[in-house]
Image (tube, rainbow, N blue to C red; front, side, top):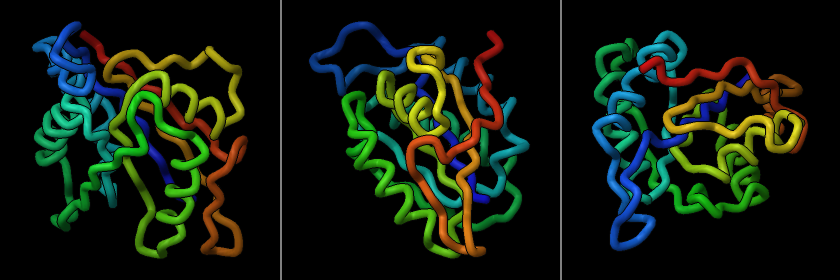
Length: 172
């Protein structure tokens, strides 16, 4: 089994020169801290993080990284990828293909995506065959999804193949 974590960015300011330049608010930072602290026991062994290039997602990862640095146990460097395919209007089909390719590397067992609505909610619904519109992820919400592996090595990232393990939300 492989594990995919979906993390929506924390609360961001309402206005900026462009949507991609919206900053996290102080509340957004607190939200991210709260969610990551709750999920920390599941996160020390993450292999890779894919972050949207939008400023609020980059700031969310920076905040989460600082919390995780206290929890990460293996001391190995964490690979962080700036991933333009996971912006608010990202393609679910494209990201499923990229995830499947990544998860089929034997050394890669877990990935965190730091991303946005509506993309993140649609990805969760499609991967886990969930009722459309039911799992809108609020700011700094995080989901853990198990990705099946067959024949001891072949990961399958396709609609309906994931299993939702848990959802976390900020407790502030």
